[in-house]
Length: 330
Image 1 (cartoon, rainbow, N blue to C red):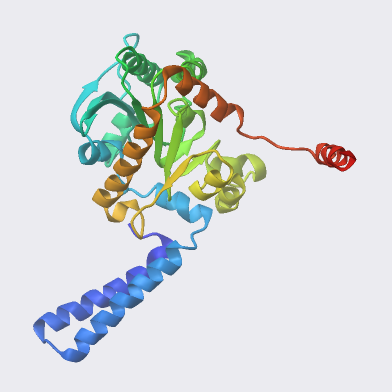
Image 2: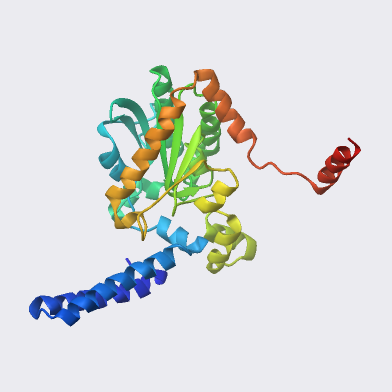
């Protein structure tokens, strides 16, 4: 799949491919020079384009169908994964995968939202949109991890929680709210990694963490750009404009203190090199976990509480004037 803004790169790559085929049949010094020049042009163009991506272009990259999903990272980062199924109340929600795994020599609990590659798999995974039983399954394994004093690592990749009538009948809002409450007081380290789309309460339902990490081309927002545009302007085609207004990129969210770390992706996006992306995620998880492991249970809860209580701070103009007068008087 070639995105619109990647077409100039694709055109040069096709030209390079043609020159390479010609060179293989008839080796020529001039063609070899042409190949090298094209390779340099492609790299320069990639850097230029990907260093100046718009919020909407990052949304497109976050949704790229070849982008690594949670289970891809499980295979590349962890080993000895043992999946845990069901919420012990209704059924097993396959849009979220949970289980024990080893991160090198440390045992951890994994929770990740999973999308599908094919139509059949997407239907089975519900496009990564969790049902109430999915959140209850996630909470069940979180409590299990807390019982055995094991860190919890969650991977976010969803447009949002499933909004269907059945989900509402089974208590979708209550399930998410309970997760927010219970996660805030977990006595073990909790790390969240946003690997694709982080949509609304559907993401936050497994995202109340001590540290939130985010791939540079992923997104994290209260609503999708299309949903926002439909509500504000009754026009979903204004999604690019909404994406800019929502401040949903990793760069904006790091600036505002919503997330704690941006993880670099390979040039061109995570879909261009799954292994390199996985290695970057693993490195940052290990570094973050090493710091959190030094904190006591009480400190972990306190740090998490403080993190979310300080989000969205602001100072009104009148307050600024008052504080300046006080300083002047002194």
